[in-house]
Structure formats: structure tokens, C-alpha cells
Image (tube, rainbow, N blue to C red; front, top):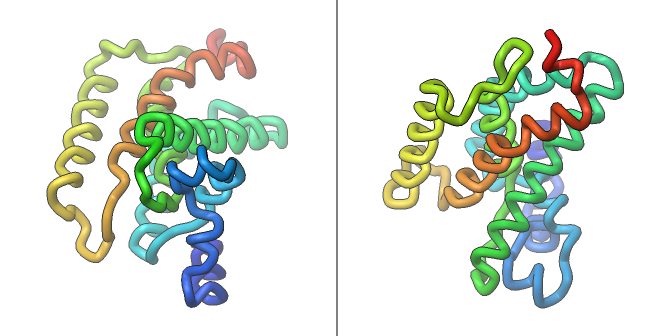
Length: 189
């Protein structure tokens, strides 16, 4: 929210959004790889920034908790957050390389944390076939497909629903491997 406050205060023409937002066509054509990172720190409106913040608070805390409260755990959490967001952007751009749209926001990263959070149990990873994992996956997929056709949140503008689903899948599929690599003691709780 603080970053969007700065963005809205100092970037009244929207120049930052165009310079630092992610455009699939430009990523491959002009090698704007930096945009895979910078786009995660931009938002289109207060509603957009607020929704990302609310979902981040709801789902990130469970993921952050299993990484640990020390500086190493915080660093692993932040790296995982960036991993989900950047990989969601890469996959989106790979699927739609000629799409001339501007993607901004942390939705891919936040959705990745959501996918990861739904798999985390007390000392184990919930299987993909668990009813909670399947239920959340069906609900998140339905909400995002619905948002492709109607505006669920008034004044939110166009929603990159594909990035949400890609980010969610990344979190769902990678959290177990991530924990085995960096926090193996989690599985011995």
C-alpha cells in the first residue's frame, strides 16, 4: 500500500507503469527482463493495491510462518514470493508472447502464496487430492474465469485472471519442493 501511495503521489502521468510494467510482446522483443520484477511493485488503483494487500495478509502469513521468524526465514519467504511472481510472469509471456498488454501488480506472487498456503498442513503437505485443496482450487479457478467475463469488483479495471491461475498453480506445485530444499525439518514436526 505504501508503494502505491508513492506511485500515485509521484507518478501522476502513469510513466512508471509504462516503463516498469510487464508487456509480453516487449519482454521478448526488447529484452525487458527487469519488468518481470518491477511489475510486482506497481498497481493500477487503490482497489487493486488493497485487494493484493488483503489477500497477501490472508495467505502469506501461513507461508511465512513455516519459513521461520528469523532473518533467514524472512529471506526465504521473500525469495519464494518473488519466485512465484516472476515465474507467473514468465509463463504468461510464454503462453501469450504477442499479446500487447501491460501487466502490473503482485497478483501472480500473491496467488502463488495462496496456492502454497492451501497445501501447508501441520508438518506435512496436503495432497493435491485433499478436499480442501481441491475445493480452494475449484473456487479460485471459477472466480477467475468468471472475472474474465464480468467485473467482479467495480472500478477494478481489466483483471489478468490468467496470471492469477498461473501463480496459484506455481504455488500449489512448488511449495513442497521448496520446503524439502530449504526447510526439511518442517516435515519432522
